[in-house]
Length: 108
Image (cartoon, rainbow, N blue to C red; front, side, top):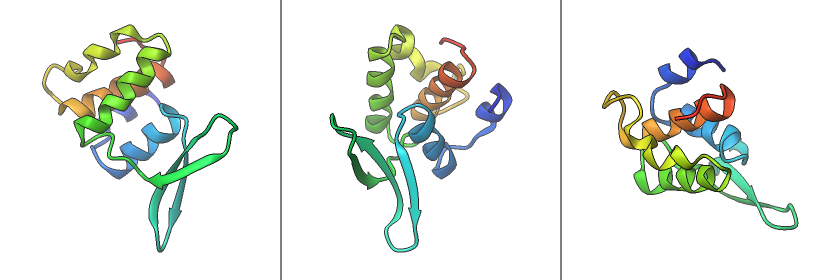
């Protein structure tokens, strides 16, 4: 993905899936019965499946992105909620800034 593709993504399912995979490094699966799920991994590498998290629409969930990115050395992640100068909601801004940092090597 390039910068323009990331910035044009709307909050919701596709942005959440991309963040789960590329930022959170989680697995993803779509199931007709269960719906969208993502997997984090325990210390032994075993998957722990749960519902796809609403990273781009829920600030409490977006805080998980900030926590992960700060642990990975992106100290500026604590300010990513203001990315886009008000063009995006806070969770959407955090998602987009994180994707830019991970996929485009841009640091915000």
